[in-house]
Image (cartoon, rainbow, N blue to C red; front, side, top):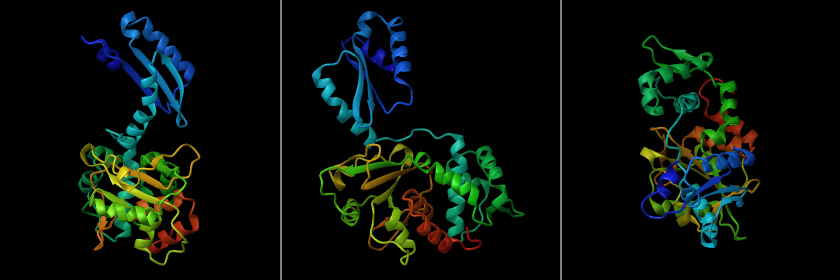
Length: 309
């Protein structure tokens, strides 16, 4: 509707809707397209087109498009993926955000938190925080002053988070198809030169920062956590790290993995070298994501101040 309104202005404009990896079936999309033909004036329909983009290529085009417009689709998709930010957050995400925040404080042996402090750090309202805490009740200690903290590692809740980690963290991989990918350490050096305070290093490099003796050989990829502050946090900085990096296609091994952090509190830590590190929980999630299960267990046991998971 928005594109049709734009295309129906006083000037003759073209409106092209690009659907990148849509969840809706093609048959349903064709039905929707046919449905609008009976609503809009023919001259408006003639200015509209819809592109279905799947698995790194244009799969279907509905409507008329010029050769130049067809050629521009890949650039539009790449730009959108590089700058993808979820503008809103659902209350259902609060459970995982509260879990991550409580774990950060538990790992760091911080003081218990009030619901108000949790709300400020997570970015959710009091009722939403309370509902999340109810789900975490089996692993909580509630103090007389109403502050809360974890009393043990919430194993069941944790593996629910691990199972949905990619979705919860808005993860996106980037691959170098030039045939000569740069090592993660080189990319890290370039990141340090950017002087960004909203990007934290996680993954294997981050885990080694918190536990230098972690049993790991090599660095399979560079994991970065981008703190999306007030709608910011786009991934355009990747061009400065390496112009060859492109959004990874399904099944493609990424050299860089970007995770987006949407809550107000980042819990980043800064080192004298200028490196900014993502929190311990983000690093632990990355180890699970890379199927480094024994290292993830070792890392969690090292961090846990009380019970071992």
